[in-house]
Length: 329
Ligand SMILES: Nc1nc2c(ncn2[C@@H]2O[C@H](COP(=O)(O)OP(=O)(O)OP(=O)(O)O)[C@@H](O)[C@H]2O)c(=O)[nH]1
Ligand SMILES: [Mg+2]
Image (cartoon, rainbow, N blue to C red):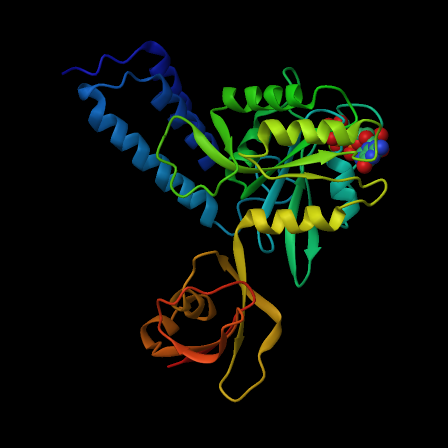
């Protein structure tokens, strides 16, 4: 069966050929996929595009240095995870970054005050999490590189301004802009992104300016509408209310565990945990310590998560946040 591809497909394909960065290539490929008719004649092409998207996504996420912090398309990943602040103009994004990191995010009492991506490191207990302040999403203003950062970041922090009426409309508007960029939000962890035409990203909702008049009612309203699907945390950086709760929610949202290691007969190194995706095993920990450890690992001993006090566990044992692991070769 002939593929019968429409002209917009070839225009997207041309953009793919011209694209210089993996992010731009992925965007073009997703457009090609969205445009192409889905039938037997395009089965092969569909699979090919999905494969190329998956490969480019892996490349984009694995590259430790995908640009300088001041280059607009990417922000170097640092720390235990990367979180991008996404929201309407004036919704309090820069205020959060300025409050919890050392970055000098520009706060202003008028909309459209942020033009650049501004990364900052947020200390959380014994680790650092990277926040990225971004320009707001809007019809006329948002440059396409903002969406590139959103596509590759680990977690989206969607700011909803609780000081203004109709917070649910803010959410619908933001989701509309994201949809145009073929991005959809979920409160769950994204296991495998099967649908190549839409990229699903995990999001945490933050209700900002909770000190404002009427903010409590708007927060309850939001919870009723979106509370089942998303975690929603209220915060006021002005009064400092629930800033710690927000940090905890960001850490939870990244879905990682901190693992401490020790040598036999030595005290554990509690200063610098290894940070791994939740669900990682003893073998993954060994691999994080050193690539060569994988083949040589015999067993491990584990402390922590209440029930373990030095018990011997096998390599496929799933580790929990705060566990101490002693690796035996
Ligand atoms: N009452 C109150 N006002 C806040 C709070 N956080 C931020 N604001 C105010 O909200 C306004 C906008 O804050 P920004 O942090 O610049 O907002 P933004 O989302 O970065 O804005 P753009 O970059 O223009 O999209 C400023 O006047 C802040 O002082 C808060 O917790 N409570
Ligand atoms: Mg700002």
